[in-house]
Image (tube, rainbow, N blue to C red; front, side):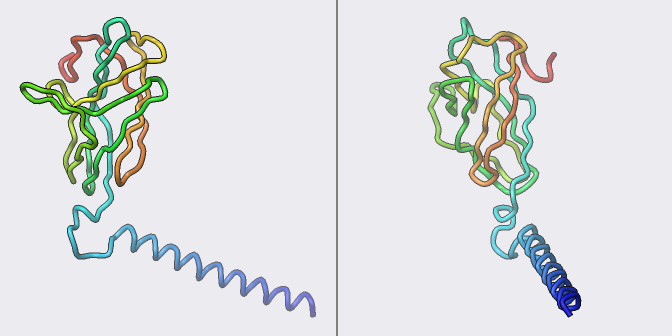
Amino acid sequence: MKGIGGARGFRRTALAGTVLATALGSGAILVACGAGGGDEAADRPAVLSVADSYIPLPPAGGMAAGYLTVRNDGGEDQLVKVSSPAARSVTMHRSTASTMEQVERLDVPAHGALQLARGGNHLMIMGWQRAPALGDELELDLTFARTGTVSVKVPVKELTYRPGQQ
């Protein structure tokens, strides 16, 4: 009798596992599809990629700027923090014709891009653990409001470097 009861118990456990797996799978599909209604672009998760990243070689290892493009093939997001294990601080800035100001966040539009480039939005990197050299790569941890943290390796390039022009 013990063998028969054991088989029934196994069947019940297997059935319960199948039901649970189906329910969890359905839940994942519902989460991925969204609840419907509302602002669909805001409801969709952001799908981010980083391109054209570089840091112009700073003079004597001092303060450096950082540039990159965050492409978004999904819903809107915001860059809310940038840090690096190899630098004391990394801050986000916005430049205008006459000023440069630190900002707390930068928008990453749905199905668009956030461009950090010379003369506009950019990063300021300070307190290097060791002076950077051409060809070094600095790890930057980009933290987004919805997506979380994305780590990228950013190469140190010559001061005159412009992506797509060399």
